Length: 85
Image (cartoon, rainbow, N blue to C red; front, side, top):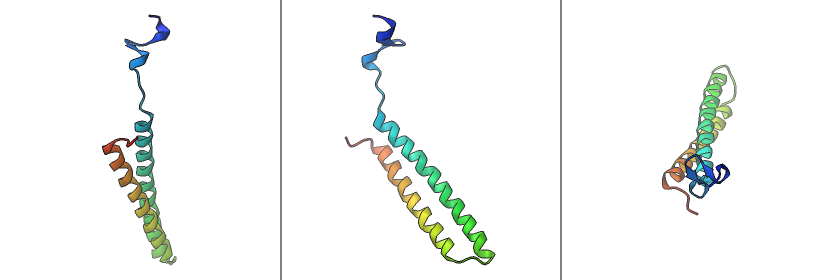
């Protein structure tokens, strides 16, 4: 067996990268940053509302935050159950 036919002490046939699981983890990480961005948007909207801006900024921030939170929950559930394919 040559060096090109193995990965460290494992043969190449045993080295498997689960691309679906990695993709789901990355998606969950991006969703977590989306929730963080949504929270920052709500904080900024509240500050602007206190200085005289429209209440619609807060409403938009809440909608964006809730949609990001829903996406994060969906991704975490998918991460826990594993891929369906």
